Image 1 (cartoon, one colour):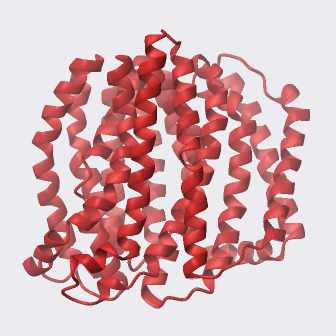
Image 2: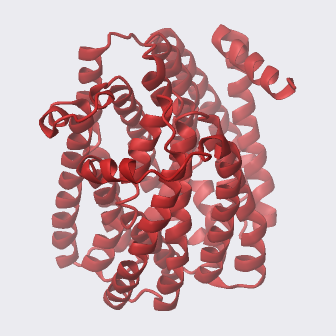
Length: 479
């Protein structure tokens, strides 16, 4: 559900914002992510401890509020500097500070729920993405508030998401604020901070591009393309419960089946991202149609990233070094809690370094921004592949689990099948007209045909899919 609701909001934003404004919106997203570096100090440990039955929920929430308050003045100063360098909208950059505390608290309560009710994070996500549609229509589309409207819309959606997450997490928030627990987290803060460096580096690319090129047009191309391929990342939600379940009971048998389910969703989403790259860009804004190559490159990058992240979660879930109290730093340094972020840090430092060097060279040659953005996507893809391969070998070294090749071949074959149907029928169904009302019916029909083919054929030929569908139906209809 969040795939489609999220795309509708992106459609509203890209249709109403100019490329410069959308670039500013993307820079804001990157900066907010950058200032969340301290949040995992709380959620990293709270997820692990709650999954093991410890009551640290209230300590997590109150600590999150304190940390986010401290980050606000730092963000304001940084926003002023960045806006002056890349000519972003300063008023919007300042207003976006309201997103910092709500994002902070939202991630913390999600971390709490991940430890005992992983499905609650999905309910929160659906509410978050769904509420952005009516709020975005009013503030961005009809009132034409631009980037400021998008900021306020996102804040409203976050507040609703927090309310839903608090409802699911209320049983874990009844304890007392424990200053001793907070002190332990602060003492061990180097571990989650180190773990989060890779994430911070991964969002520096937007800031780096806008500073080096002194423009946000390329950021717009890249971000719009990324918004399409982000649907592939949603497939990873099928594995979100794997990490806390491994923490709780170390049952390795579920890994193989979970990986097959991950591929069941990720493979067709990869295919849809590729074949719908041009019409999806046209729907978001005809200005971005020439970026279809970016979409294809980023689709494969996101697909590989989803698999890599799942493998990392498996390794983190089987690590037990933090069960013992008063663990030495040297023990952490030898554990998978240190290995995984080290791999991420190496990957993203390499990525940013190669990207910055490439941008400097191409900018000196006055390359067009679509070319710069394409190279950006190439570098992002190439730097992902080796770490996927290495993660696979590390997992196999620790846990022997096999991939059901027959299942994957089924999913790939059906994906190729609906792709062929798309190539035959799309020219007669999808009409490239500027009016969104004339264009969208054909796009939605073609998308429904492809999804329908995949669901129907896999249900017919794959027993695991039939079991999955039956489980979903039972869950939805049970009291």
